[in-house]
Amino acid sequence: MSYTRRAVGVLAAATALTFALAAPALAHVTINPGTAEQGGFSKVAFRVPNERDDASTSKIEVTFPTDHPLAFVSVKPIPGWDVKVTEGKLPKPVKTEYGELTEAVTTIVWSGGEIKPGQFQEFEVSMGKLPEDTDQLVFPTTQTYTGGEVVKWADAPKTDGTEAEHPAPVLKLTPSSGDAHGAPATAAAPAAASAGPAVAPVAASAASSTDGTARLLGGAGLLVGAIGVVVGILGLRRRAA
Image (cartoon, rainbow, N blue to C red; front, side, top):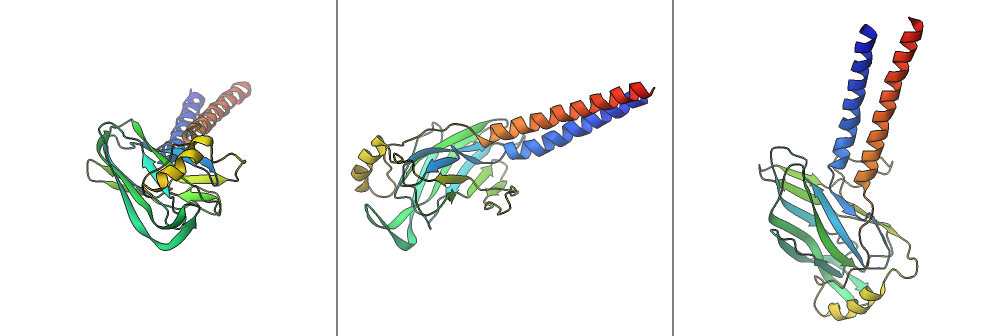
């Protein structure tokens, strides 16, 4: 009986550890898809889960890079949410194929809506052209709850590959395959140029897989492994008896 109690205790501890490791990872604000091609246009979604059980998320603010500004940015309306796109003057002008860029979108704020406990919301943005002189874009994001709590997902990626405590959403940029512009985006971009930096062309690609799913599967693997260890312990104890 004592062996059984010990085994159950080991299993409970392993299960708690598994979910303690997996839950925070799943609660991060992410950008989906996590990759896009350099020099092209893309549609991405900022995926915001509510990680509190006693408050709702009521406001999301995403900061856009000014060192690699995006000439064309537009947002998809979300029922129940107000959106404000803010442009600002760049630290230094950036030359693009559409002319010299002196201002660009610096922040997008969604407010007035509600992400309840146990739910998530995706905020879609069309953007381009993506820079060709960097392999990633970082989008620090601020999440505000109805209780007044403010969480800043603004930690830059660590050089050692480990995950920061509050990682900012990161869009990885890969070398162009030759058709990154996409027919719809290439056709729409010149027409949109006269409307200003806050207006984006038609998006080129849609979301696919998510980091959250991978982490969840990893957590499940750890749990299965823990169960296997407990079964092995019980077997050894029985043989010894």
